Image 1 (tube, helix red, strand yellow):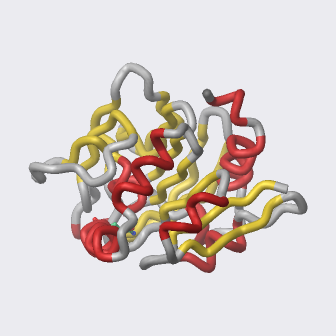
Image 2 (image 1 turned 90 degrees about the vertical axis):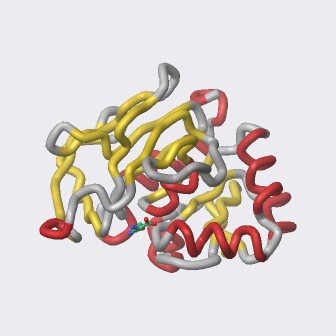
Length: 194
Ligand code: GLN
């Protein structure tokens, strides 16, 4: 049995819990930093990154989350969750948790495209994957050890760096759970992504 947590400070938590279901997976709704000691992988849901950061500080999650990632435990950030993981955010002087070598730009699709759906072909994961974008960021630069998993209209919308996975969209809002299944595999077989 593996234990995967969903950070439950704000945002779309329930949908991630559902998307992670598998016979050998126990899902923990993480509300206290101590719970991180008992989990093998963690999902940062979408929501609002500045609000989530405020709650991370308020509930004493900042250092424990950094330590979790530093120990090489897999983390999967979706939308605002990906913003939390970036080591650079366009227009902000400081990043949040800085676990992936990438620059993100918030709300990068503009007003006309606040929310939309697209079908993506994703390296390592599969073809024709349904993706829901809601006030989504773009990953506009990645470092040499980051693999681009998907682009949309030429912009990077999913990337992986070893045990860390990030996407601009909300894979939990469709019933195509291939991205979650891929993350579960990363947690189950850490050696593959070390
Ligand atoms: N626009 C939000 C932010 O900047 C992210 C939106 C989302 O997670 N759907 O944090």
